[in-house]
Length: 253
Image (cartoon, rainbow, N blue to C red; front, top):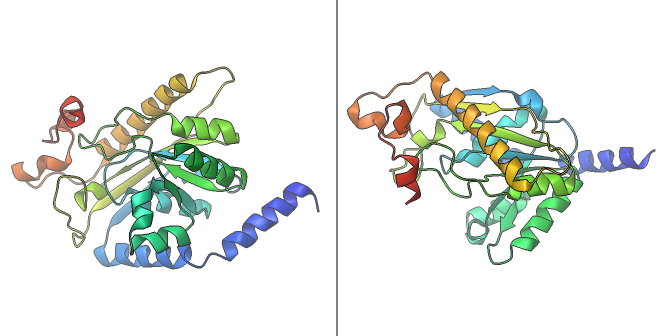
């Protein structure tokens, strides 16, 4: 067996040995069915069936990682998300995050987090990143950190943009969570991998990533089948689409 074949076999064996991730996925899908969420995934073919990849998504809710992970399911991939260390320190979420082999991000030790993510990518994992670093309260794409680009370039793997729209209606920053809300549409749009020509700066590539994320998000927002039920329900739409979410400048402040 060739070395590359051995590495792929080891990776498939590792997936078979997953003890935590598959039951969590099953539970999440059961909850989606109970709530009758209208989930639509577009562009899943852009996620490679094998090998490492960075999945870079916009960030509108506390549930985004669940739906971003769901977007990789048609490709039969498990996504290892980079998440704040405090989530791993929690007594409830910590064991789950470690069991699913997500990657803690300690802002005081960023090099170690970057190294762990790079090693995962080189092992053939898909690593999920929210390059805005925090939820966008304007429901537009904020300024991005360059980490997603640097990870993809360092590990020599594809950088794949993704947009999710809808889960913020269940739970987002500054609004009361409503995890019992039924029939909410959730749109997940995945774009083609971003080309990274040699010599292009990380800042330029990050600007390209922001442009691609903004395009995917705008497409999801305009295709979204639900409309606000009244004036008090316009909070979940961005201002440029007639909603009452703060403008990006105000949200940044």
